[in-house]
Length: 441
Image 1 (cartoon, rainbow, N blue to C red):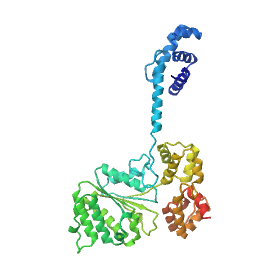
Image 2: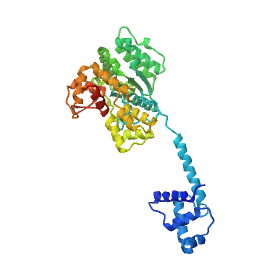
Image 3: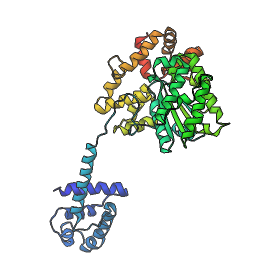
Image 4: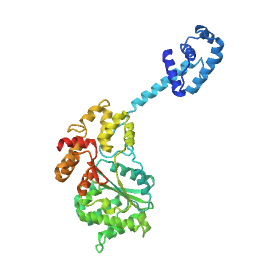
């Protein structure tokens, strides 16, 4: 059984929080006497504390029970105030215990964020723009960003939204295609159509359309137009991931993007092509002479994934059941600049070791810190590309934005190491500046 002092303090705080007012001295006296469990009349209380019996019984007591009934949202009186408070406190303690047991199950911060994960953060309004584009006839979406910026996670949610709309869907990950197919455009097109047929669970009929007298671009177009799209009544959304893998063979990539443009434009002539919706995802870190952006920049929606802003980082912190003081949040933003993967890694380890904020920060830009693998990959890339390394060292020597050769600037930007604004370059975050200042000096 709780003491009357504990119960009195509890109700005082509750009254102040809910009304902004404090119990008066005489109200506190009456309440304390009622909570002690000793059956005293209002006359006894008045006599012991030198108050008028009528004042206690007709003024103080009625007003007190009316106030506590409103605050507790339950009818209370002199007779039941103690059991009501005991029950309320016990219930709250049980809830707190239950919540403390419900720790979140953190996924390793590697790869895409699972679809049902509470740790996925929407980037608004960009993500909503993707969903709006998706419902347009012959929609074409192009998502570009360096690695670990959330491209696959977004693609998964676009595909899921399509399925919610009862659209047919298919996803092709180009990095899993055999290299021999990416060196022969005819074989690639044949495989592309066969794989689509498989994902749509249709009977393959490629032999009916692959005619030796026609080139394979015509054959694949007829197969999709006259067979695949005719077999479905709803739009078909095709997600093509790591499309940059096609860029290794410039001839094939140019032909493929020309064909995609042809399919997109056919929607103006043949309504059946309006069913086809394409979502292409490109990793910009691959050093190639072509990109989706350049070849199809005038079509559809082009989305370059940005880092998280401070509000989005705060939301991710909250979903990790963590709390950072304003100065700590500022330190995280200065070091990581909202990079989705880097922020998730930091919060993952902070969740495991909640009292190690300073240690995680102090070792972040070292070869033994939580970002060592990530930093080593960037270091090796710079070592393999002397032009990029030299340009990056220029940026390390100043905190002011610098104008670099446009091609070099683009290649560095595509790695994620720098940002470019108004033609001038800046190192992307404090982590890269701290680490590479030591390694490239």
